[in-house]
Image 1 (cartoon, rainbow, N blue to C red):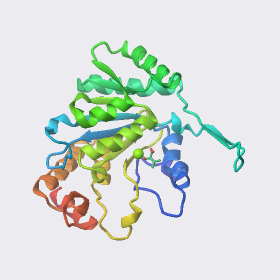
Image 2: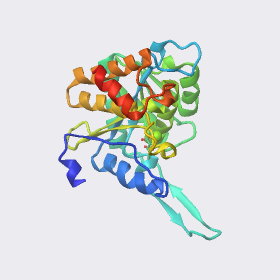
Image 3: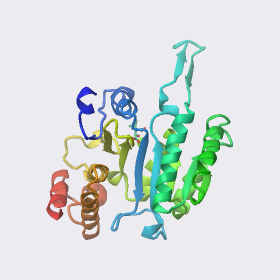
Image 4: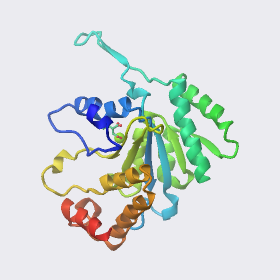
Length: 291
Ligand code: IPM
Ligand code: MG
């Protein structure tokens, strides 16, 4: 952490290895960085690029154009709970969802700002019909903060219904704000509808810039294909594009996305998961050549 702290930004490769329990390799590394560097905003574009394969029928490209803003510091990820009487018949585990006023307000406000700036609708993902503390509180704060943004059109959709609509009618979602766990689940679904995990990137932002922000593919380390040289690097490369945007080199961020789009439309340098035959290296080289 001391070393990372000195960086302007962090690019994280996918982490995880068979034999090391995930709650060690991820909780004590990825989640620790997100938490300790106060990267409380996780921005995940769910955007159908030209040429990307969409498994949904009758969808136009502009119908899948969402920005997911996932709360990245608390909720069910806060690490609060207990494991009582392990190994006995009375064994009980408790995993608390932690929703602070500060935590909810800052992520919801961030999402309103994005919706206002982009002149797009804002949808809050909830489950206030069943989670009588956390999500009722979330809904209340969503309304309260909304008073500061009278021009932003808002919607609240229950998480179960949202997962259905993302498949049946994705165009209803533009800017979306969700709690940590709901955002985690829905962004994998989002990846599935816009070309698969091999393209999905995310930015973990500390908006105050007190700490470095971190950019990463949202997929795992794919241990089943480790060492074969066939993993798709494009999600990581999309994360680099987000990193450049963050460092205010947007003109370069866009160029990278253009190059990825060109690869997809012209079918150049694509890896097996995208229906191509290129190796990881060839895919990277194709992109570098286009740039
Ligand atoms: C993600 C991942 C992580 C998360 C895991 C690896 C801990 O699924 O970035 O979406 O749940 O946040
Ligand atoms: Mg995830």
